[in-house]
Amino acid sequence: MGDSSVFYEYSELLCDSVAANSAGTPTASSNDWPVFNLSSSIQNVAGIKVIEAEIPNVFDAVGSNNNTLIYVASGTPYTITIATGNYTGADLATALQTQIAGISAGFTVTYNTTTWRFTFTQALAINWGLTFSSKYTLYSVLGFRITSYTASGAASTIVSPFVAQVSGPLYLSINSFKFGRDIKINSIDNFIGSGIPQEISSVICRVPVNVQKGAVIFYKDAIPNTFFDYVRYDFDSFDLFLSLGYDQNQIPLDMKGFPWSLKLGLYLYRPDGLEKGAPRIGATR
Image (cartoon, rainbow, N blue to C red; front, top):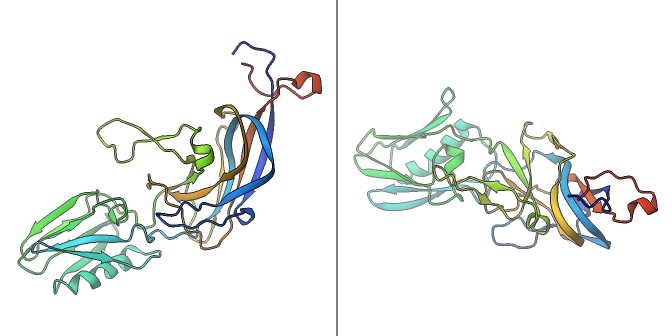
């Protein structure tokens, strides 16, 4: 940190999804993320950060990657799949009950607006259960963990152990495989009790979902003068995409064609800054 001959300049890069060269495909298996190609490279990057973002809240709380659960009746598993979209607790209970009652007559699902939990009630005198095999299920939407829950007998119940996230997660992730490899963001999702953080290779920013459906999330970084550190880095293309907050695999979020934008702040190395009259705006090394 003692080399006073190294100086920096600050630059901003404005990114709009409609300007991406590739629109991207929001699926679990696709690697075709939205990509931006620049006519000339940005060189000598010393630090980078998302400074601002504007994201419409139009994405589905229940998408194609988290809309299933397994209902087990007398040892036989049945995959229950509901349509993607946005639900109230009562609507989601009705959608689940309709399908499960078709397998086990008289089965009911209710949503409690006081406790924000779901209750599944069996009418038949059988052994039964609910299984959430992975994060690609309704587990968090319904207030469950990724595991199996069992019950037995007529009038037996299974109740959500946690508050259901019917409206979706409390935050989104902004991702870039290009920048994420150098920006060190860790998560303890799925490591409850272990205390072991997991580095997420693509996440570059966490954005709170603080508006209702149809409104626009306006994000501003709380400490814009603090940057993630780079080691002299050049780039002429990069990718950007959004994902649900609890998705560690970072599956691209389907924005249904609605545009979103963000502003990247960049610190650039200027070792010759004084000679060119550039202001010294970064810390010396």
